[in-house]
Image (tube, rainbow, N blue to C red; front, side, top):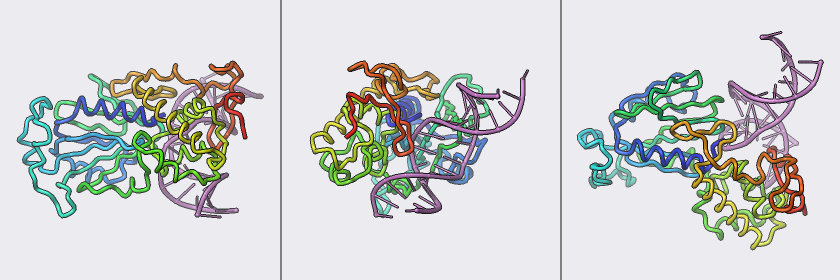
Length: 302
DNA sequence: AAGATTACCTGAAGGC
DNA sequence: TGCCTTCAGGTAATCT
């Protein structure tokens, strides 16, 4: 289940393998994974060079050069590409953009981007993107993921309601948005509008590390406890990034390999197993409609 | 109006 | 060899 670390893993692989390459084609087998008509996506990206890949929360954002002629004449080799000079020629639109086009992707539950030699797409591969020598497949068993075209460098409406990235947000700003809320802390950590990137797995891990019960209202926690929760959230996300993310159901990285963080999980999926700190059997509870795993002794309800 | 519930999907797992 | 139900959870839409 892709959360922030898994998306970061995909973004890093895209940068390594595709940066500086030209978009040459798109094959769509199931159009439902595109918010726009595939024809429009194809036309918008044709011959454009991928100049940047970044991540905001669980969104993956691919940035394509705006000047097709300059991009097409430039070398495709990232080493000799010469950095930003290729496309940043000084011409800008009225809004400060340079006609760049973003392709935004949210993997939702089961989305995967795969770049494997001799890969044979199965029935779950809904789109194939060609990059001038490299072929990238979008696979999504449950078809929840979405590609969305965002033209002209504008911040997409689809991301306007998304809060700051969890790894970027400063405590003071985060604190003022949740300090008075009566909702369970777990529900607020999952709310992408407050801070984006945490999903069910890493919220349980963060609350275990912080020693806080998932149903605790945010308003019942003091400033230092909330500070610890945000700190633990960032720590567990950064650790998971270093381990290539978590493979619980079917996440694999760009090259079809599973993440290594699953064996590091201390709470998620360990119902009935002994707490790694105090050996009390972990319990499971539904909070905000999601299964939650916690230690009743280390994370006492209040 | 915040908080809760449901829809969207498919495959795995369990009951009979 | 099957059929049916339940569960999993990110986000948007829809409730109370």
